[in-house]
Length: 420
Image (cartoon, rainbow, N blue to C red; front, side, top):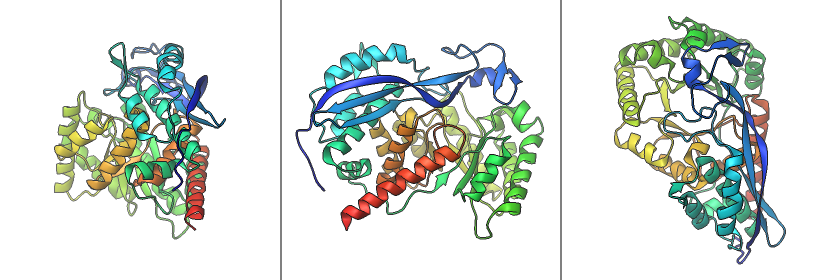
């Protein structure tokens, strides 16, 4: 591969932008906030940093202007459910701009951009006034470094990662987990017609509003989804089904692993013959608590012959977290939520770790990201592989689906052309 040297960062420039979705105060929702339409809630927020229960997300674009005039950029963004399960609090651009345009700019301007990994690790571990940088800052700056390294070497971001980490480039795009909002059945139809590899990643945030105190609302949803698939899908189309329960099983069944397993078995039978993945059936109050309950649920499912896959999200925020779940025998699949990982160098290492240890990795993130962070994520997937990659930004599905498919196909075409 072509390897250029002495392409330096001339200037760091920032702009404030908007994210693809919103922040949600999950603590307020679970405390019983009253729905106000399909999206909003009445009442006061509970989680620090929130001014209302649902509020728009903001981002900062970090642009690295290179000496040759090219620009690499990344977007500082974070997940919808900020401040939950060990995550950093809300990202406030006005508070972070002085750090980005001050000490981070001073550290990066004049640095050689022919290599990515060393600079990314330096920024990811940087402390200012004795505190590590906010995860959103580490996420955005390292995206920019990867994009800038690609410009400097005239390669794709995927090729930069493969070159520096020794990973094997994918030869075809990753399967995509396409999101669809619970009440939007036209959106479900579009993803079925587009033959989404996995769907619908529908969020079930509240026992009262989304699952039902007898589990009846979630059962009705799964029955409708199963029927709709049979009504409109192509005969040779056989997607996997993935639902995100945001801890509602733990709330409904008081963390009783036996009852949770029995209920998940019921959902598995309803959606058969499609394979079922269940994300975050329980959200514990600590990482160890999450490890214990996941291990108990999996054991109860195995005893009953329930094959549905469990996916960990909350409390698996970092590579160290993922390693802890693996050491405890409590992990089967994991949502690698890219903003939670901080620097994208951590996402790369997490993907490699999961592949080497037989862990099903969903290369995910959040609808609260941006078009650029989605493109960077797609490039990481081409470089490192994953079982699937989830649509982002936004919750419209079509847009995120388009961005990911097109970015992966462009990268693959360039890599093939260079190899030829």
